[in-house]
Length: 397
Image 1 (cartoon, rainbow, N blue to C red):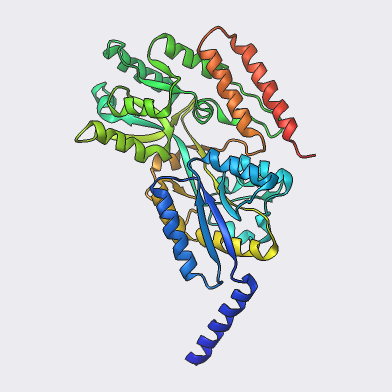
Image 2 (image 1 turned 30 degrees about the horizontal axis):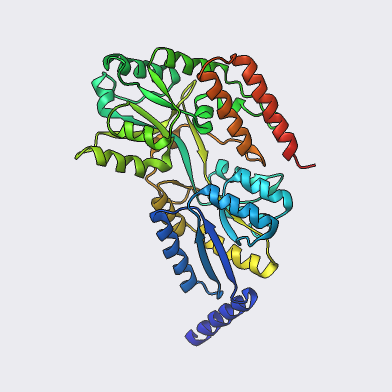
């Protein structure tokens, strides 16, 4: 009986090998730090253990933008990968030329039940499932709890009003030589701080940001906050050195924030990471790249899918989530991710071709308003018109 079982297993493996033809596939990602070593090791494990004879080669880029540019060149006249980690709006852009495989071809609906519903929705464009999510990050507020307790508060702010109160009290006690926080020129932060579900109704953009920019203008006028027109790293270092009360960035930045704090202090201050305080409570603006499959031929595509499906299994997903300091996309994968984000109002920005350009226009508009000399309503009307014009340009007929 044991011989028969072994024979069946061998025949199954041989059939699978023949179906995939010992395919060689190329995987691209954009992590140039220690996470590059993680991917090398994980891919090596797949190459050694998969029963299909598939060999994956890893190539990484120094940044996401470098990878995006390489894919755009590849879609015109250069090699493109089989699998890559790609943001949703860029997946939608690539699919304008039919470059991606609709993963509904391989997925059964029952297989998706273990994923967070909102995360799954992020990869669906015009009815096609363009991505398979592994992890997600959130827009976050980092809090120096030692400084906050010195001000008489035991918990971080959960609304814009309490954010302003704490920031202004800190600036006042510092004699206005320091500010509560530096306002990042980041679309992710600005949308979370606003009423996120009001920016897009499924048909048209309506960035109703007037209350938000007035809120920020007041903080600037009172010298409770300053405008960060430099880099995230500069604001991060000032927070890490204990010069500001709050710092705004992605949850993915936590390893860099803790490293920066360690460079200033032998013993870290009490660091807490929470969702961005918004109008009625904390908002968890959720984002991140997913695995996409670039079409080559049926045999290579199937081999690529087998690699993607293996990465999305609970064990591999859990390991990547830990290495990436992110939330696993599957609810059945255990995680010690901060509970505050799971309890907040989850929000996902639109995923459509051209949305990265719209986010840029949002930042340009808010920067112009906060730096002065621009009428708020007129500039926001211009932003909405530009956003909808961009959407029309990229619309699928």
